Image (cartoon, rainbow, N blue to C red; front, side, top):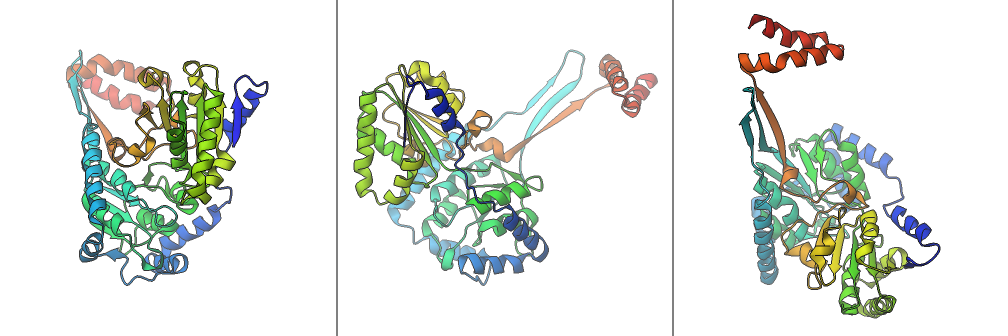
Length: 428
């Protein structure tokens, strides 16, 4: 864990190193992924079965889960968990319904009709992890925005190591309205969704997190299909003053550290005494935390504490770090939030732990990592829609704007462009 103070002479160098630290997997899996994708593209189902047997030790009689099988496993979901999933689903749905965009249609001053129409993608593939991370909440977060956007076909792939199926994942799929589910994972699942096989029709876009092989596969099939993002290790940055309970902040920091040994948790505070109290609280919690091995490794290697002189004057540091999750545990969080330009999602006040957003808050928990919040946003309804613009000129409006188009086409050395407009101008 790094302990930085803005008053230290070497702060700028240490902070720059923190910003530039790359926590993604350093093992190059691109060659292996390329071979798997090429094999799936050629041999389809046969290749998928072989890789599923090799990596997941499972040889399914059918790649697809039948509706009866989905219902059977979903019924095994504990009642209290299903109720919690339904609460989460209702809140996620309500928030994302507010995102539905409006079409644009108008006529300008010279009589040209212009417009923009939003249309849903036809088919989307959702990858759900099944190894270290098996998260039913991610099913809701990925599938519900697609459903709200109006996607006709939502396909889910989920690995089933050893043939074990997580009932809670299938219960979440039922709540989200996913009916087409395949028990496959890894790069081979991404290949199946991108290229299609005899059993699996291809999709237009793939969303959802996965391991290094899945991330690399998504990278390689981009262009054949759309993707949401290349997800990196999770991260949280907590801005907190000394009015907070240090144990609360310690738990918040560990809530992301327990995701992955490469996850990162950072505390920014204006009190060095409080910083030490949080660090001590983390040490105490880790002693009995069931995820101690993962969370402890993350905190020890990538955790950081930054002591500043003034929190309000330090938001530039936050923007440079561009965290996936940002908690503002201060008296006036909304005022501080006005300075934030780079964050995946902001959690305002002392009573809004990031974990609420992971499950039942409403906004999406699929967020930009690895400082990509500088230029991208979290998953939303917009990710499952596209814009189509239209333009309509009549004789009079074409005369009004056509000459300028001819001039620009000629200036660019494109005579056919100019001619296609000019011939209409001359005939009218």
